[in-house]
Image (cartoon, rainbow over all chains, first blue to last red; front, side, top):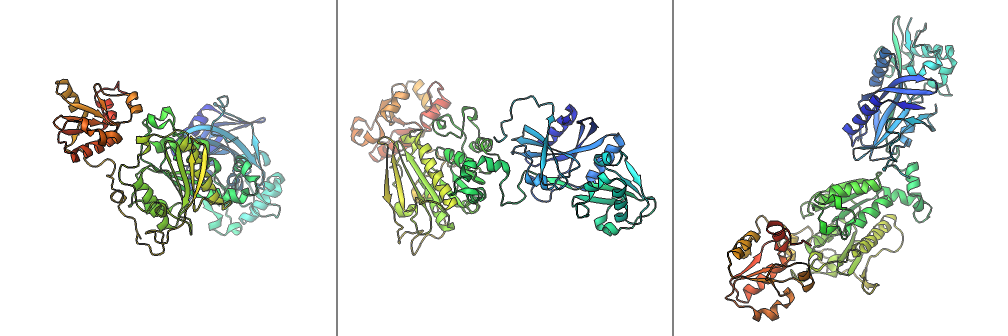
Length: 151
Length: 476
């Protein structure tokens, strides 16, 4: 189970809305407790995808290394990576799977017309051939069913 | 000894250590020793073939080993080695030729029909369709084509949503009044299908911009309501070799066909010349059953999807006529005219022309359309309040007269004017008016030719009167 705390959640959504209609990406820092990953902070990273960033993102390894160093300094862990799907449901796409890293949780937030419309979190197997959804708790979890999600 | 930093995420597999010091001469040796010391770590770093996983990057101090000697990169005392993965992704399918699982579910009712199937659905996804006009016909077209998964839909329109649109333009709602149609349409379409792309062309299609706009699309769908744009769309499609899915509506009747297909006829083969200006009323003048564009637009959408999929028998060379009152479809056979000036054997029109001039109609919103024969609503109001004797002639139809009228106005429908002109006195000062000022302009023009000199047209008609003088007068 992964739980996103209020401050991290707000920072991530603000980032996603700021770069809409492009995809945003960032690092999730927090603590790993018994059966629970607690995300305390969302650290925005630059979307370094060389082409259109409307439906692709790429994290520069140097920036991820710096995020890792920051996590060390603060005594927390780099738990996951977040990115947004603008005007697209929060699902784990094949592109997401093929370019993921099995060490992290991958959080996807759907931003439709600039508004939050749903989120999901996944982990992937070492060969990156399958993604497993993990239970996600966030401050808006209890809000009504998102309208942009496909049925 | 070189020191290797363990990423926080991998520490559970390395006895929770944050770094490990190991004697090693090269990066390769160091990683191998690390994996040997912590067997659980091995599968996270190496594939089953024993190769470093493709997403694993190794840095010596701040240098990526790919730019050094890769795994043979030598290490020295005090070097700091970091492991950092590559991370990327995004909503886009990595291969343009694929459908995501969500798309497969969304289009499942298409996919299970062999006539469409995965191949057909991918054709729809890669298809680019331009809708000229986002009104009565454009509404069902945009919604159904978006739902069907047409990957790129372009909309050409510059209008705002008006209350009188909502009787038939189902892309818009009451909350959209006064908004740009394209903004409302974008929201509505993406709410229906966020996986497609919508291009907004916030302009009137013209001879100047048509080639550039049309160039980006495979199929053009004509949902316009005026002759200059119809001829423009037709000629541009023929010249660019794009099919033109044509539809038109009036009162209770509609027409649909596909022009511009190879070997098929074009609009000019059917109508070589535009009708005289004013002879054929528009929907704004003559009205239209609100449901009619739904039916005609959906037939246009069907033909568009068939053209993209390459299935069935397209409506090429056949003009489908629909009569809502009789509830009957008829079909007329159309043939390409070998002498057609644009699609014939020896075409004389090789580039786009001035279509307003060709159709003999003024452009909309001229720089200053005011003529000496016009009277502004406020001026008329002032003169009536001063008690001046003016004969107000309403040239609309009787059922329109029932909706609203100016006090003391006399009804003489435009069509009856020629035979009732004797009821009028050339010495009297006359102000003709209608709903928007267009029909009354024709009435004024007719009266002038009949010798009337003291005749004016209420500029902007009752619509302008309602806006500028008396908002109690309903607009329709």
